[in-house]
Image (tube, rainbow, N blue to C red):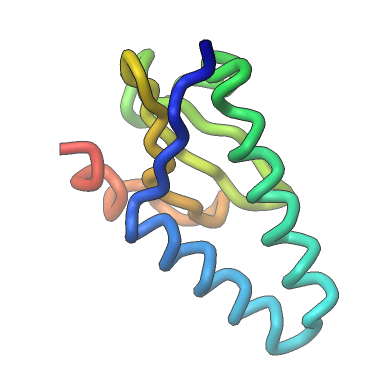
Length: 101
């Protein structure tokens, strides 16, 4: 049975901010990035452990998938997967850590 996929409010805000930022230059590419992030997130319940362990956190339940230059960071629990953040690959993760506490 697949796990239930949940998005944190912060992750939703992250994705909206990314779309707005990219959309300043290209609505087409903003839509492409958002569509790809959503597609990758929808695939998580099928194989949640396919993402790599976030190296900065070293917790086997907190994983990430890369979508273009963004990190989709999520936590795997017994019955659910929580998408906690979508951050640029060059951004430090410190501001995201408290989303898992």
